[in-house]
Amino acid sequence: MPKQVDYESRRRRISEAVCLLADEHGPEGVTMRDVAARAQVSLGAVQRCFRNKEEMLLFAVDHVGERITERVRDRLARTPAQSAATVLGHLASEIALLREEHRAEARIWLTFVGHAAVNEPLAGPLRTSYATLQDLLARLITEAAESIPADEGAAPPDPQRKARTLLALADGLTSHVLIGHLTAEEAEDVLHAHVADLWERMHTTRVRKPSDLRTDA
Image (cartoon, rainbow, N blue to C red; front, side, top):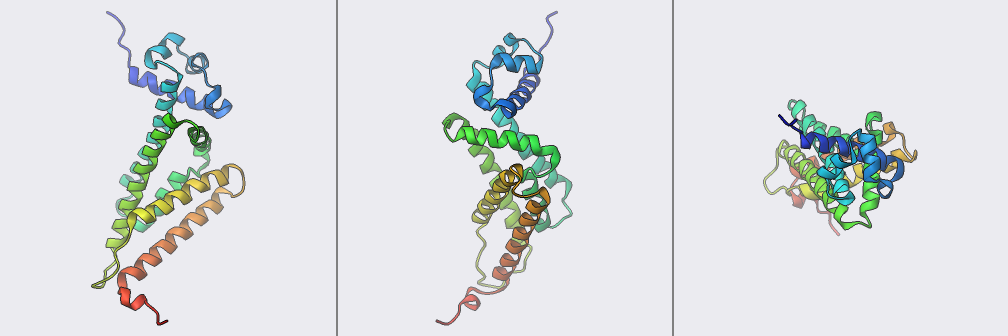
């Protein structure tokens, strides 16, 4: 009986090899032959999973984005008892890839981002990953705002705008840590200070009427 091949598992294994090689040589330096050697499979096995290098790179970008998103969702599932504001800080740290064990993943992510700036097919999966993460952050910001008793007529929050700002901050801190401008601890401080300020501003907006925020000219 022919041996059954788990192609999805093989594709993920090949994707890991692509990521390692992209980290070492950049996406342009990745070849299907080198990927086969790193993944310890035949070149034919790689070619049966992916028709060409571009398709292989696209799958690798998706793979990294899904891994980050799944880790964020897992963090959400593991901390249901914590306040939305507290979880928001934790998720921002996860997205920024600040922990030492995620340093290689951070390099790979930024490598793909840099390559995607001149490669539209690679940019698509990255935009999808960012949109998913932004929606998760917006959901938490909405939950945090709803936990604050609001006065009648209080200004509603703009969760997508706040999520966009937080995501951009977390994403930017990734490169600051990688090049040594900030330590991981300093980047954590920046994130938590921003979340604390965000929470304070949301609290002020929710409990005071817009008319109370106006000042006389």
